[in-house]
Image (cartoon, rainbow, N blue to C red; front, top):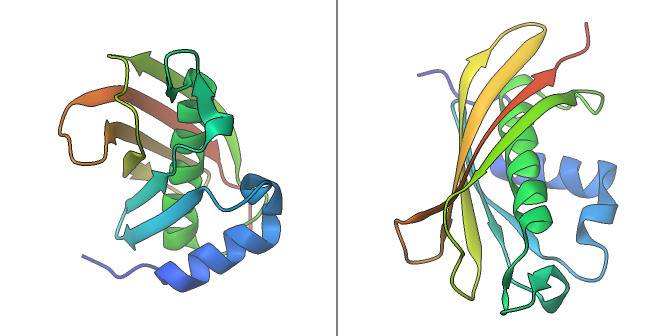
Length: 142
């Protein structure tokens, strides 16, 4: 396997610089790992992400999946701020238990113009999928 273009620290620093709004109200998204065609991100279950019943909301899971995809792409192609989401599909499989969520992203295709990946979201300490997402990003020409 080829190494990533950007390290974990470099990827997190780029995300913090280019998308500070993702951490508005306090850091909640934690990039835990990047690797060849992969990333792992944790979402702290802050109150602002909860819905009635004290579980993480669908929109919060959608943001987590999209952000994890973007982090995996950046780590593997370098700092390209204008790579943009062109498609996201979500399957909500079960209500998440109260607590933090983990998004494990795997890039299925990483080409010059398009990247396609899937994201499995689970609760911390559980293997049960609460959400499965697939997404496509458009990568601008260099």
